[in-house]
Length: 320
Image (cartoon, rainbow, N blue to C red):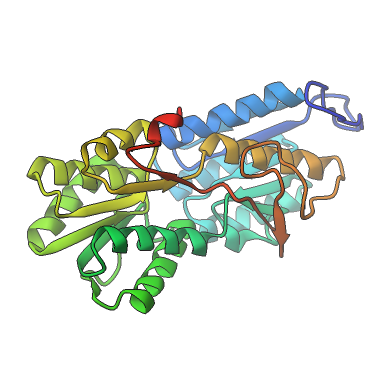
């Protein structure tokens, strides 16, 4: 196998002499988050001379995503990167990939550590969730009713943020009241998100806060608040500068937080390449992207420190 000393050299498989084939199977096609992730995967391909690219189902359907991973196994690719819609349902497929000798790197799926070779996270998800609810609590002055939305109850990271954030709020802000039994689901669909947010605001007229663990959820919550001219309802959550920036600018979203999807895709691909080459994946290595320069590794999970907090004053600094 050719050594890869620096970006720009071509990485080859030992047996065939062909370029390594590393494929990202993302959650969904045609949404801004994963459009940006594709940029990172393609940049990695250019930097390292690897055949790397991204695929995804047209909707966030776990079954369709599983079928796509099955097709990659049949194709005998060298490594599969996956951001699963439902980590538990795709687990047997990833185990099959491992048995076929394929390197598997997951993202947004910490529970798959040990099934995948490594799970790569931009940060510790419990910290991200606590931060989201801290921002919401401060925007609400520490009291009042609030609700929120996730992409799906099966989306592991969304639920990690919610559960950690809810526990944080209960402990630190006892005057906050979560009015739902569980978060709403939008399936990463803007129309679904907007309809559910509007229904919730109508059902709870005293609502003072709304969190979104999906970009569609937070942006559509901000749009609903804008249409109602209800700046008294504070919105925080996952967001992209290109989507949520206008709501931050106009005061209909208090804050947004995220990580750069392109950088996460790039970092996951670097971990895959290192694993293919038999190089150590250990604390302190540099995955060549901001926030991943000195990662930590715990129980098969690679953690960066790549949280971004977006406000009306800084969102224009980020071009994605």
